[in-house]
Image (cartoon, protein in one colour):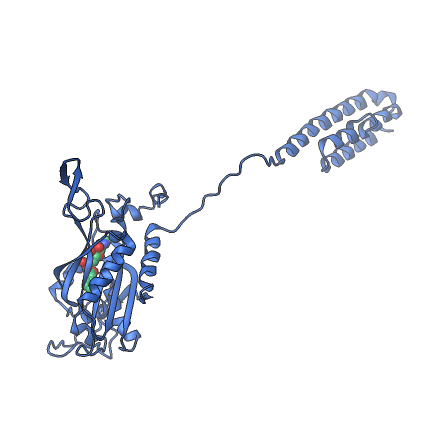
Length: 365
Ligand code: FA5
């Protein structure tokens, strides 16, 4: 055999070996075993001309070394693909709903159980729904309290004369004034009356994002409110108080009390601020330690304010096409962040943490 032919055979044997997928032991026998392919080829050295035999010997030695080295690699590959079924499994990381989404689901459930319908209305809405239909005429100072973001589009109703003697109605030719980022969920009140063709009974729970130009430990520029609205014949403050107590017991536990404090909103009359009793001191404002008692550091007064409420103002009913002589209603609107962070065991003193996107914080809930 010419040395050239031997080189070709060596090359072919290497290629064949590279393409093998069998396990290491089988390959060892097939290629490097006593009667293996390498030895078969090595025997052919006798047929190589004497002058080339030294070179042939070198080439065959090289081949053997290469096959042995590659065999070792194949062994490593096979070993790394073994699966050890006795090793304990790795628990995959499972995410969960954001705490505010969890609270929204729970609040929805609490109110739907007593016949409320969950709705959502636009978060970018006309001035008409956010203010004017709620008894806050243009330029009324009460609007300032809502620190509103305005959308930079021309106000199409600016030139329409406003007559305080007439009940307010949306001007039929106009969309509804300037667009705003809704500063509260009360924009849903007249929208809900319109959705039901001004036909009570109405039992609405409107949960949505709100926006205000505010930022500190208890205020964020984007936050959530839930707004309740009930309109029917004979609705009075007792129904409002009963609903607040029901919510307090369901959300905070049976020991929680609600309290109404006189307040002023343009869209309710009478109006109240709603407080819930503090779970740490049970509404006393004092924490007892043995014979001594100290001021509760969580609430300072025994109560936490959560939002506003009141009996729907007749002008608002009229704006929604409902006869205020026939129907009455109550409404309430609270911040979800505030309501949620007052819960027992959650020691959150800065609501901005909820939107910090810090997983170490969020994974606790
Ligand atoms: C209102 O927004 C009224 N629309 C509530 C209402 C509805 C009264 C229906 C009567 C009838 P107020 O501006 O007080 O009211 O806000 C209510 C609650 O929203 C506050 O008590 C607070 O819990 C929450 N809130 C207000 N602004 C922020 C903010 N920037 N960040 C977080 N929560 C806020």
